[in-house]
Amino acid sequence: MDCTWGLDDTVNASDIPKALRCATRVARRAGSLLLRHLAAPKRIDLKAHHDIKLELDRRTQRLIERLLRREFPNVSVLGEEGNVGDPAAAWRWVVDPIDGTVNFTRGIPHACVSIALQRRLPGSSGWDGYESVVGVVWDPFLEEMWTARRGARAHLNGRVIAVSDTRQLRDAVVTLGFAKSAASVRRNLPVFSRLCSRVMKVRIMGSAALALAWTAAGRLDAYREEGICLWDIAAGGLILECAGGEFHREPLSQRFTYRLWATNGLLRGQLERAIKPSRRR
Ligand code: IPD
Ligand code: CA
Image 1 (cartoon, rainbow, N blue to C red):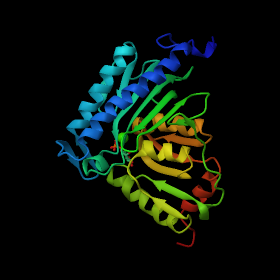
Image 2: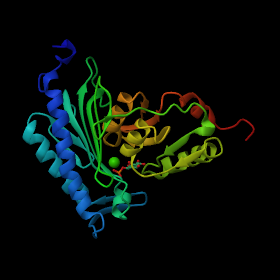
Image 3: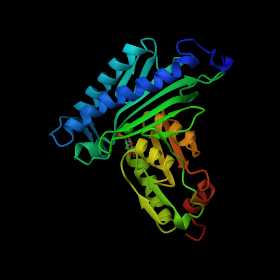
């Protein structure tokens, strides 16, 4: 067995295919809740200026936790809606029960379930010292199952996927995310306006996990967000990497939060130059 697995034996290399199958099954079960409730009235637990929390966010996460823990009772769960066990353990599931909650609340069928299995990297200790080993994103509305296992190719509904070969900004379709804080919205507006004039199209679609999966399949060429959370990107980031893309993230001072560039691996330099404030301004 690969000795890099020896950090902790909660999960070992031979469990990984089982973990991928388990996450896939659990994501489907959770997705059926989303499908059933898309058009129904929903109970809102919290409404902020740029964010909504539904009772269903929590209920879906509880379902995911119960099903994951049934097969992997010793692996903790770090989720958007809370944790089970130690979120700093050597192995952890990272779960977003509904990614795209605002879309889902309004009946817009662009949302998904995201589940990753992460392990702590040898020698690291902080919240960011992990890598995803399994990633599953389930879009119950398009019936698209995006999957990846570290070291293997990424798949959409069982077929291998790969990033685009777009090399020029003028040909690129780039998606942006506007995170939940007013400060991040303010910081992103100039990025939006600079990119609009340089790329073919900018899209803002409202689900980070799907933005990553769609970049992995070449539907989009790049995705940027500042202030994005770990649970939004843990599964999709691995899917992108396993499809040949670049998942470039910088941890921010707020725990579990990143500045993210996700690209087909060919565009980041040009994109970063394009969003720099011009000296003439
Ligand atoms: C949000 C979505 C959105 C992104 C936000 C996230 P949620 O997740 O992924 O695309 O721009 O930053 O918070 O709240 O729908 O789970
Ligand atoms: Ca999310």
